[in-house]
Length: 225
Image 1 (cartoon, rainbow, N blue to C red):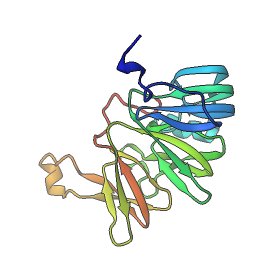
Image 2 (image 1 turned 180 degrees about the vertical axis):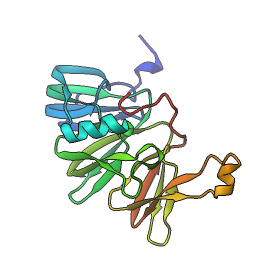
Image 3 (image 1 turned 90 degrees about the vertical axis):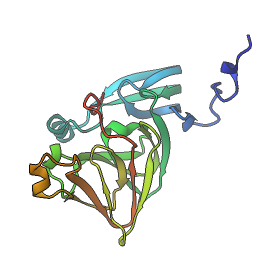
Image 4 (image 1 turned 120 degrees about the vertical axis):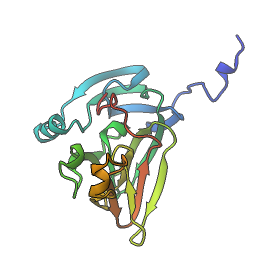
């Protein structure tokens, strides 16, 4: 049988070593000899002896997620084999965190991660419950994290001389060392006249980067779905 479908770039080959790799732009392959964590429902295929189990988040994290809609609906994947993760054909990226690194990520953009990484759901400092409540997942430790983004992301450097302002519905994540505050770019008079649709942004100060996607969150896209 002949077809471009069977080209080498589309064919899955046995993993050379345990761990996470990029299968293609839209999916992640994880070779398991132990366990990993992933977004619930993100498995698209696997081979080997694997088990999938809903993962609890701890009472504090559960309560925050119930109140805000933010957080990670996780599953633990255990055993020995290979598993492929994807979500609605979003673009996928593997981030390798080193000791001392920290990344704040919106829960809706997390696909899978190594068990060596730790995460917790935190309120975005300076934002509180304004604008619907801004709570993100903060990852730290050493290991790999796969994030996803609808469309091609824009990574913007942040420096002390050049703070960056981002739409809270478009932001994917940022360096956890950055300081955050809410910024109002619309006058009261403009708001009374109906507004520009860009009343409040998240301001990031310090040294690092911020990742944004080329669209705002659609109403039907909620965390964990």
